[in-house]
Image (cartoon, rainbow, N blue to C red; front, side):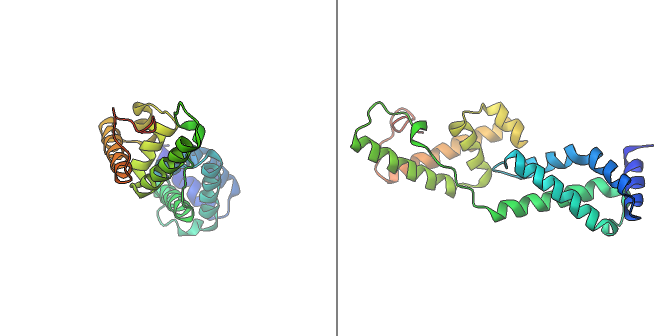
Length: 194
């Protein structure tokens, strides 16, 4: 029996109220649903949110089991529910990424330099908020978490060249934002921030 045939059998049994068939679907498709949710959510959700959305996806499947018109398309139906749940979660929250002072490089800690660093952090936070979500995610992963480019590409399911382009363009946006506020551009760095 193929995977599609097995899924169709489980789906038909679930539609008739068979909880063991539903449990088989959950066991079989949990990792698939979690992968869909991770791929859709940029910036990424924490693991607890991914697990919660996965559970929500299966609860919705159980509640609306009769809505599955084509039992052989169960996998697609689950992917659709998972995508919608993930997008809804992203809409519900406004992602803010705190830029902590201890993540910035500075040799002096005078009141003037601290004030300047706070201002730069605010400018960078606003510039990041203005970026498209994928570019913002690439920038945060690269410069805030120090993630390697190939790892970012794999995590976001993007070609490496696309990640490099997002990083390049994101840096240009940050540089422009800082220049607009009067900070000078030296050796690809603003006080060690960008």
